[in-house]
Structures are given as structure tokens and as C-alpha cells.
Length: 246
Image 1: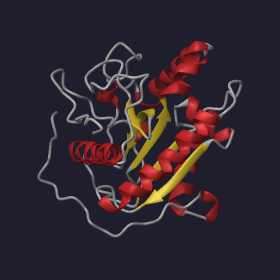
Image 2: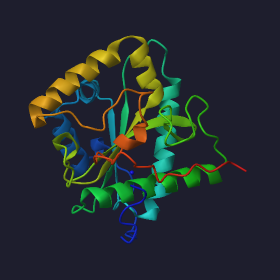
Image 3: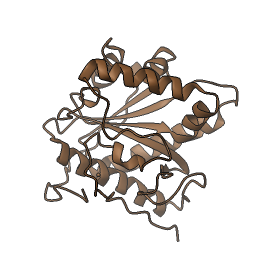
Image 4: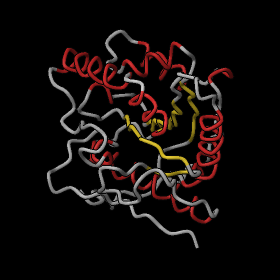
């Protein structure tokens, strides 16, 4: 999210930290929920999810550690199954948050490279498991109708880290928020999405003086430009490559 900047940064190989529920007292999870609860945090959708106890944080080792890949994909598969099994009249919007213990000193290009490396490895593992791409979204990362398919479910990903230029994306540790594209479609269908989007943009302007320059409505520009939070150049192309299940 410029084609693979800072590829020279090594992949971290620290040992895996097993996912933990905030109910077990994960300090990083608690910090993240407090971050969303802060009055200045602009995303009204996240605040609504927090009020319904629908943000599910899980803690892992350092972003870039390959030992995170299988546990994270397993966690996403369980989350996707839960979302897909929800009753049609359930209006709760759920988010899964992968929180990483480091690195804490990322600038925007390095975080972007780590983010896409992580998502690529998750996809490659998904393909090895024989999981097909979600049929309701595009497979082309530069297509405005693309969403990331993992465990057969389409996701919109939001990255946060300590070096983010946008205050709403500036969290003390790297984090990847996985939102269900299908739930976003439900929000659009019942009219809630447009109201939440307008309120969030007003709050973002109050916080930082402007909206995120990469923001666009679904179908207007590739959502991959938004994942890392970095302002993407006009000629930016996504480094993610979709594989085929054999």
C-alpha cells in the first residue's frame, strides 16, 4: 500500500503470543478499548460496536512474526462463521481487532509494508487450505469492488500504529481491524452507513481539521488505498497478489 516500500526491513521472528480475550485481562486489549472509548475518537461505528460489546480484540506477537499467521487466520475463520450465522434481523456490527506487541517505532511506509506482508501471508495460507475467494467481491486489489477475502468472507481492513499521521489511526501498538464487508452492505441497505459516515467525517474534521484524504465511498475507488492509513500517491498500486486455489 507504493508498491512494497521498505522491503528491506526484516521480518520479525519472535515467538507467537497466543490470542487472549480481554476477559482474561489482556492489557493491550484494554488499552485499545479505552482508545475507542475516548471522547475524541471519531468513528461512531466503532463506538456503537463498543457499546454493544461487539469489538473482539485478540493479542499476538510482533507484526511480521510468521508464527501469528495460522492462529490469526483461525481466529478470523471463527469470527466470519459467527458473522455469517447471525440472524438477518441482528443489527449489531462486529469487528475483530488483531493487536500486535510491536514494533512500536513504525513510520508509515514500514507499517504499510508490514501490513501487506501480513495480509499476503494470511491469503497464501488460506489458499493452501483450499479456501475459495468470497464470491460477492472482486479479486482485483485495484478494483473499487475489491474486499479482502479470508476464510471465504470479505473484509475491509483498517490499520493503526504509533507512527500514523492521522490521529484516529495512531495507537501505541500495531493493530489490524477486520470489518465484515457483508455487514457494511447491510448498513448501506438500511441507510445507517451514510449517517454514520457523515457523523464520523464531521468528528474527524473536529479532531484533525480534515478528513482522511484516502477516504472514498465503496465503488468509487479501491479500498486497498485506505488500509494502512498512509496517504497513497495517485499512481499507487496495491502490492497484494491473489492466488488461485488448486
